[in-house]
Length: 186
Image 1 (cartoon, rainbow, N blue to C red):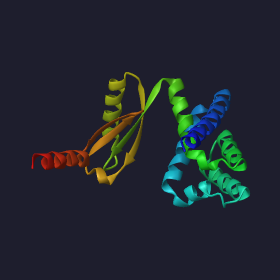
Image 2: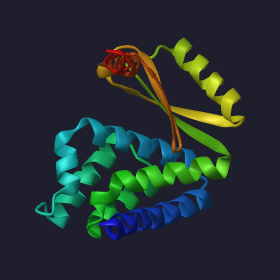
Image 3: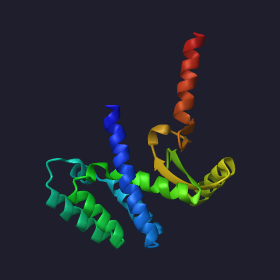
């Protein structure tokens, strides 16, 4: 099982590196990154899209037609559209989300940025997001790009993931720790 995930990571990394090099040559890194972030958001929001890209039953031409329509509707840069269509033609859409992550990680690394994933119980307003971004920049001593997610189960507070490190300051975690402490005391 470990070799399977390793090959997927390797596959995603190779495709992401190739896309990065092409985007860099064409001076389109920001456009491609924005397209990929939008596509990643669409994957996260749409069960039908996730099913289509992961389904071995969906034909190659159906995947290509669907992805071409999505790229056109989203106004994707030609390079991004061609990349997605190559993935569909090669039956590699099942690792699209991993390729997007690998590309964005590579871009951040080349720019000396860190990516922080911040999960909150409610959407953040611009002021709160700016404060969190500044705090992360001061903590890591580098430029930070903050990706936000909403998880109502947190009740309050936030969870910040920086690479392999996670800082959990959510209300639900505090309540769990309190419950464990009370069980231990009784």
